[in-house]
Amino acid sequence: MGKVDVLVLGVILVGEGAAGVVEAGLVPTLVEKLKTELEDIAELILDTLHFCLRIDTIQALNAGAVSVLKEKLSHTSVCIRWKAARAMMGISVPLEGKKKICEEEVIPLLVRLLSDQEPKVQANAAGALMSATITTQGRYAALEAYAIPPLLDLIKSPVSEVRLNVLKTITTLAEAPAGRKELLNHLTQLSELTVDTSEAVQKAAKTAVRVISWKP
Image 1 (spheres, rainbow, N blue to C red):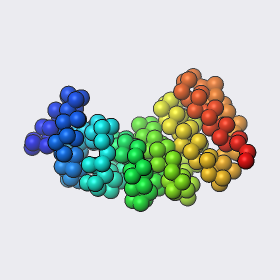
Image 2: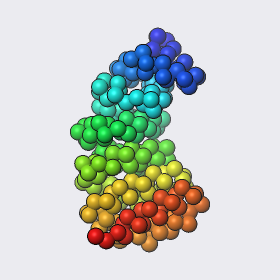
Image 3: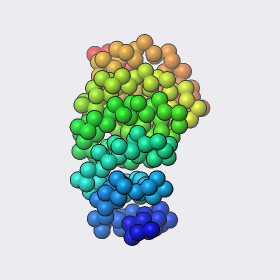
């Protein structure tokens, strides 16, 4: 196991280590290693990137992390897929990340992952879409990728995180006239979630219904 691999394990075991990785400027090294490492180490690198992205996204963006993560979204490993989607959600927090995701045409892949059989993949793909579709560019890219049907398929998911992220993404898409028009046909279905067992889902459902029902 090399120096970077030991570093990764250290970050996982000691949460504060992520700040040290960022401060030392080692995020680009992790991104580069992610291209070639075997599955078990790649998982650890993705975990480390997750913590690092909560501190800073600039190093990862400058190192081309979006294109590397995009490749991992289609990995045969479920664990790699959901962790790559989680990292994509983290890197899309700043405006620069949202723009990069659109430029790299990541959104169609995220839409495809909504139909994955693993709830963790679904939840993180929806979360990344939620962040990316805050921008007009991301919103229309998602609509062009036909994101609404697979999102609606997930609103009755048994996993509350999936329902929550899906509802938040639906809300951002409803801010586009075309999205609102399509979603108006599903208000009854969405209204059922206003009495969800999760308070967070209830709140998100109420917001979604309000945005979809809004008239200029």
